[in-house]
Structure formats: structure tokens, C-alpha cells
Length: 201
Image (cartoon, rainbow, N blue to C red):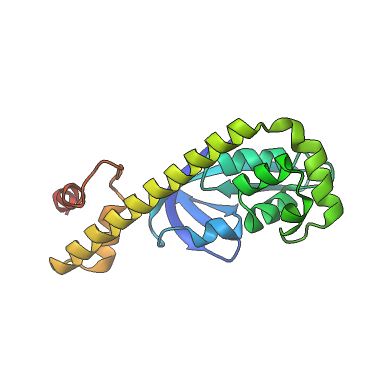
């Protein structure tokens, strides 16, 4: 229903964030591992979302990658695991670790996730083992590692550009505000990012 939301990071709490877009603040629950990876407040972020509808509530669950969202959707198909349980699992172990644990029928690895006992871990393996193939799991892991390196690289260039702007006499808040208005890609140099920032200044 809502594939993703892109907006300004208005607020970050222990297990959720508030994302502002179009003058609306969306409260989105995230795995704690994703909370740790968020950029500074007022940055522009894209969160892949799942809208959970109950009789008395609408809840948004969010993820930094499409892969985590797809794994969340698979986990909630397991009998007895709801959205909060699935979020808890993804807070403790990654989507890649879940895939390989299921393929190896390693219930202990899944039981490391908070709130998951051996019985539930075995149930996850039983209900999801037909969903994964070893070759695809390796391909996805390589893809995830590549994406992570790219995002770290972009984050590093972004920080360098902010430092350069403050050295030129701009305030930190102005530097952050301008940098969030620029779509930084992997192939851009810090110098190019800085030029785009100065044009906007």
C-alpha cells in the first residue's frame, strides 16, 4: 500500500523514527539495528515500509533496504509471528543470517534473536525452508555487502563536504540543510558535491 516514504528525519527514538514529508510526520517502527545506521537528524532518508492494519490501529514498519522489508514480510507469514516479533528478529540478526540459518536448519542461530525460543526458531525453519535457495542466498549476500559499501562511501563523502563547508565559514546547521537537498550518487566526488552545495548556498 505504501512502498516507501522519503523525507526529512525529524525525530529518532529507541525503536522508531518520525519522517516528515509533505508537512506530515510519519511514525515508523524500525529494527534497532537500522536505528543505529540512520544519518543525523534533518537528513533526507528513504524508508521502505509495510502498513499493518488492525481493527483498532494502523502501524507503519520500516526498513533501510528492500531485502529487509521482504524478509519481514516472509517472517510474518510464519504462524505465531506478528509484525512486532518479526521486527524483533531483524533487530537481532540480519536477513542474510536468517536465510543461511534456515538453509542450514540452524535453529540456534535464529534463537539468538530477542524473544525467539528454540521452538519458534524451528517453526521458522520449517515454514520458510522452501522459500530460499542456496545460490540465491549467496547472490543476495554479495548484493547487500556491495550496497552497504556504497552507502558508507556516500556517507563519507557527505561528511567531507559538510566539513569543507564549515571550514569555508558556513554554520553546521546550514551545511546539513543544504547537503540534504542534494541527491548524492556513488560516482560523485566530494569536490562535485561541494560545488553543488555552493550553488545552492
